Image (cartoon, rainbow, N blue to C red; front, side, top):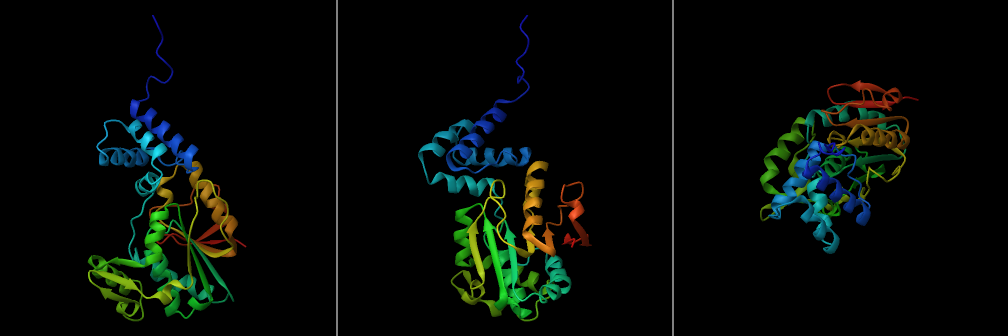
Amino acid sequence: MKSAPLNAHRSIDDIEIELFIAAVHQKYEYDFSRYAKASLKRRILSLTEAHKLAHISELIPLLLYDDDFISEILGYLSVQVSEMFRDPHVFKKLREIIVPMLATYPQINIWLAGCANGEEAYSLAILLKEEKLLERSNIYATDISHKALDIAREGIYSADNLECFERNYQLAGGSGAFSDYYVSKYNYIHLHPELKKNIFFTDHNLACDGVFCEANLVMCRNVMIYFDKELKNRCLSLFTDSLVPGGYLCIGTKEDISFTTAESHYKALTQHERLFQKRF
């Protein structure tokens, strides 16, 4: 009687996903192998269904022979959902606790990792402008997706989101009117060009790239929830190495640094908003 193969418990889908992820890595050097497996599988299955394919492995020829397909892959596998002043209580605490400390620096560098379509970067620019700090601030907004970065650079968003944006802005402690920062054209809002002057949108892959800049504040919200423990530790190590002593870290409200390799490097400022300070 033959013994069962060692990998007999693995599903065909799991094997095909591994082959697909390996193909992405070998051709484009994007490494998704350390993303949370369940979330990654859902996203790849959605991509497969969108192309009306019977098997995940049928994505591989598209990947290999259609250079435009990688943009679609990144759109599915990386999370590009955000809104202006998302989680407004976080921005309110940033304004109340972190911004007064940032004001003590002659030059302020902020690394916004995983900026998606740019809403959070512009939210930061508005906050800093109202606190009269934007002119001496650099916001380095990075993402893995070139398509998302192109949208971010445009600063144009659907007016269908306007009510949400305005409500968030007020709840975040906005000191003026959100309408001060955009013009309406057709069914879109165009954010004022002056907000873009101190934002630098560029590509960066948290899975394999190095420290991006020396930062006073690092924000990476709702990105690491899709990573496995090893990749999460890698990201936190990057952020720790990037931050100046006494610098600040802001992560997603459903994320934490407890039981990570970075935990000892930080003290918590607010647990609910997930604001931390790097120890001196």
